Length: 242
View 1 (cartoon, rainbow, N blue to C red):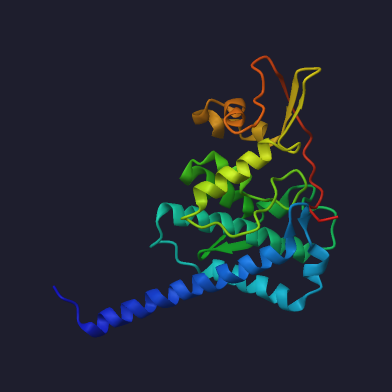
View 2: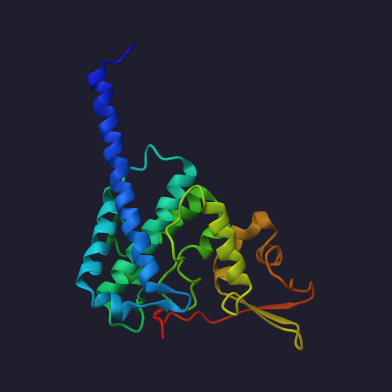
């Protein structure tokens, strides 16, 4: 059955409007990331002092809250949820700033239903565990998510997008496992101190042969087979640029 031209035109306009909305918040998010995120952390003080850019970030999370993900492909959805997590973390961290850490004694920052993503009120914990990890089965998300803490993998300075996602994942994973935050190896004691991420989420790396196998696929100096594995303490201090 052929649809009337008017119906097709309306459908096209609705789709175009949705695309425009998505482009608008993504473009704004990219601008903010480029301006305030560095390899050493986030310029929270400078960002908080800029009322226009605080409002721009509000526009980003408002766009994320209203996004319709039903028509998106799997990689598009994953990129969206990663951006949603990181953008909301920035929004909530700036809301608490100045602060030494976003983490509170009972982890309510992460477990409270304080954010809205694609029309659903949720928590950071639920978004990570019940959507990003459980629905996509991609271990490299652990190097793309940033929890506003010093031991977290660095926040990516551009929004995630479906067409770039695999390359973005690899860049972030390689960067982390080749950094002291990810792996500290002592040749004299043959001890490898891994990020606590590899302990907390070790089951997520099973398909790659476990955390060490995952690391060695990406590390410039692979860990020896007889390395003693320990884990670093996790630094929950705010990832503020110094």
